Length: 248
Image (cartoon, rainbow, N blue to C red; front, side, top):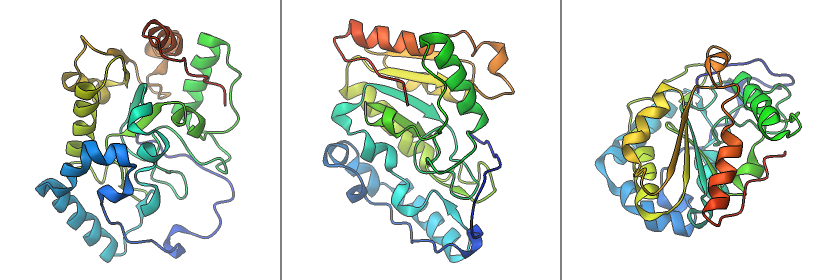
């Protein structure tokens, strides 16, 4: 997701914020994810990605999210708990907005991102869930919704700046391995970019929900009225899994 939006009370500028050095390591993941993904951290593409990120930081560029939040999606949703995968594209690139979950912002961010606002509207229409006033989706993640971006980092105020540096290889492997080693997951692919990931998923084992992106630029073309949340819960129920409580 490449959205940029204003926020209140940012405090000191990002340039003044201390940036912890990014170190890509399987040790940043919970044990069950390590078992699935540890080998990826030894691959040449990951070493090249580490070199790229180190070089960016050496040049003084500000990278989001903070180093200790890059793998938040994995730490909040253990492998054994994954039931749903909602794929985003890019972390938010404004100060304090990205925290490692697709479409989500920390609770202290006063303004909800436009796409998330539309997700809330559709959720209200679909399941009569009250429209949330906060943008933090941690509660979803803790119930088994893996909120995964295709890229896990971005340069401040430079949308898409970390594309084709290795992140897509890593997150594609996440999707492939989830498809291979799990049963009865729901993969939510909103927009043309996400829908390209369909080829990574065994649709005989999982439900793939493909739809219009919730961005204000496209939501009116079919996102509204698509009822993805009731479809997710029905599929989970049909596969003897607990439904997601989407209320925040």
